[in-house]
Amino acid sequence: MLVLGDAHASEPEKRDALLSTYRALEPAAVLQAGDLQRYDLPAPTWFVAGNNEDLDVIDALRAGEEPPGTRNAHLLASTVAEVEGVRVAGLSGNHAPTRYDLPRSELSGDRRRHFTHEDVERAAALSDVDVLLAHEAPEGLLSYGYDPGCEHVNTLLETLSPDLCLVGHHHRHREAEIGGARVVSLAPAWERVYTLETDDLSLDSRPTPAGNSEETTERSGP
Picture 1 (cartoon, helix red, strand yellow):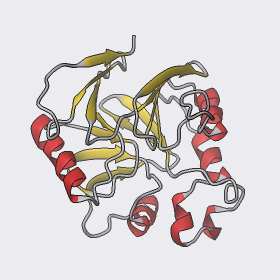
Picture 2: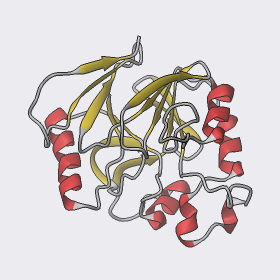
Picture 3: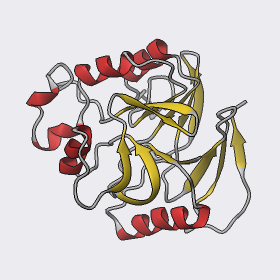
Picture 4: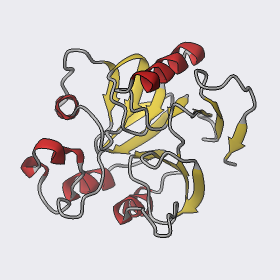
């Protein structure tokens, strides 16, 4: 299974990198960690919304609709899907403390990009989760002289007990064990791509086909 970090595919060079990855690897299924910005895709792709998306498309996908110009785009918004035998749950959006306690129905305009307490509560009620996919990172994974992580992702790790958590947003590869889960912050899709082994949930990574012809791989996980 192909795993991708942030794509930012509204930018032509990054869109080309994304599509060349699909062409080169011909995946049967893809997981993507947000800031996708392209929803007509060559292979079935399960993704969480990031803070940079077409929010009208995201709202339609949340409602179970398939708006024009979308193909193979499956939004995980406090929902779970079985992908190649792996149960994948997703928390869409990013965290804004001033909007977190509002009902989702009160978010408008660009503020629709955030998740709320309702989204976290719905995600926490899911069961039998193997992989948690989120745009925001949990606390304890990254540091910029401060911890940019989100405590609500830590809450989901504790509640859902996934084996693996994949996050985007920060555009850098980092790994840690948090709340009993292996947590991986993914490099952006225009730099590196990952493949997930469904039997043991280990990851291989390599340079993005469009950006680097180097064939060496790096392995993480058990």
